Image 1 (tube, rainbow over the protein chains, first blue to last red):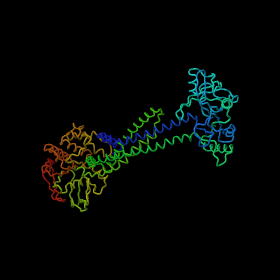
Image 2 (cartoon, rainbow over the protein chains, first blue to last red):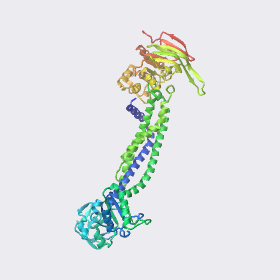
Image 3 (spheres, rainbow over the protein chains, first blue to last red):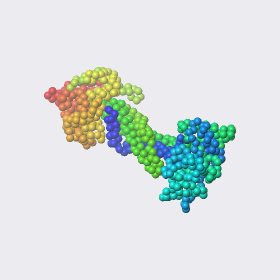
Image 4 (cartoon, one colour):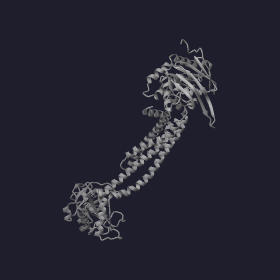
Length: 407
Length: 231
């Protein structure tokens, strides 16, 4: 019997006994649905985490140097950061580490009062070097960014985030307007494109930037930085770059073992990996459970097929009498098991994809259906059918036609 | 057509003791003969029929069917022989349930190479007088009609040999007679027919009667045979 005909026969046989076919499919359907949904929701969560990190950090082709030892946590601000990263450090990294393209410097502070007429807010205020916008890949949608002249002249200019624009200026055109930052007058020079939410879920648009020179000397009176953003010539080399920068800063800061670093150097990719790793351990456990569910579905197929074989002894005998060989019967039952399992898998994939889209829509995740998982699930369902169909098919092939026809 | 030479068939009981069912049996049946095999139950006639039908192999001896020695063939080869050279007709019809008459008739073609010819199935159904029943499910047919579907199925691959095992055993006398008339016609068309029965009236249709008793050929005689007719 040719393969297409065998599948056709399997479909007809399954169609004749719909209730049993349904129960045969059920376990596999549930298993495959959970597998598909888990993999896809996991992937969506991962993508969303990545996206939020990108919103916060701007780009992944960088290395970040923060003050404070390797165990310090949170975003260093001017309130909390030890005064260890100086302008000379930034210049040394840019000129002495061969893998480095350029270095942007930042002074970060939050809870700073800003005012425009009768409106006020307290966004993050970041002093940045002129190359910060380029290094981070930020987009200025209105006006322009911080220029080298602004930096050199300690200009009182600000480029504001979308939240600040909305909060302070509403429908007004903010460009050229005088606002007050900690009671110092600044002129609005530009507006950033919205960045969305960060990893913690808070808005990344409630911020404004001013020249870092203005920040250090006119606003905060501090001569150290809360962060250096190091752009690499080759992003693939971030591990080596981190080591080189560390060695340089240890030397410059006079740190000798066993003293710990008074700074830390990380790559955003490493931070993301740390966060997504936690998620994927859980995902692995749940995937294991879903695979077990699928296997249980296979066991259900096996037991129902075994019952079917004893009920269909006469059919087997008739087929043998008219010319079916043992292998024809074996193939018939194997294909039947694989077909019912595959149909169960297909239904599971539909349910899983549907479930994924429901979950991602409800939780505002990107709708990421993981097609590799879908393909894997389809293959798994066929494999489960073949594996668990083997014993029933073997038993069917070895039904004695003489006995079967006599009954 | 059939050359059986010194065949024996011994079964082994669960405790290991051998039980002989057929002992050193030899006979030949020529192409175009209509032969009955009679015998009490337990005489070995079923064992003989299973061997003739290539569903079983003899323990010793040789069996040539249509010039080919089939006693030593493997499962695949014997399945092929059943498919091409033998048409079975059973007492209990053995049609596939929840399947139409035409689908039952097509079944042997499914296991032959090449395409299934629905037209041929329909013309055979017409030949057995069931042209209007092709799309009926077997459960909608009477016993006589079911047996005629089974005969049509046996003819699907145009085999030279028909093996009928008590074909009228489950039918009333009218339906039984019509089935026997059909077999008689098929014999007249040149087909070899071997019929196993213990019904004297049915056996009377054949030209030649073999009697099996205790696993040996007890009698082999020519008789008038209603099937002979003008032939």
